[in-house]
Length: 65
Image (cartoon, rainbow, N blue to C red):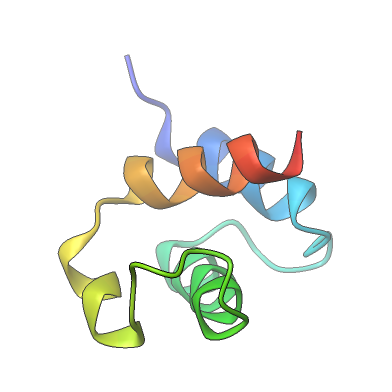
């Protein structure tokens, strides 16, 4: 079972966003920072809305670990 809050917390911690509340909005903002920095060259900021919480959190965790 996917525990969204725990997964978001794990992703935010991995990205160094230690003090942000583990909310979908915080995860999207964190992910947008990575996209804006060019971490995923195939994504643009407009693509973020089509990604799930699981997709974004897993991508950040994989990059950081």
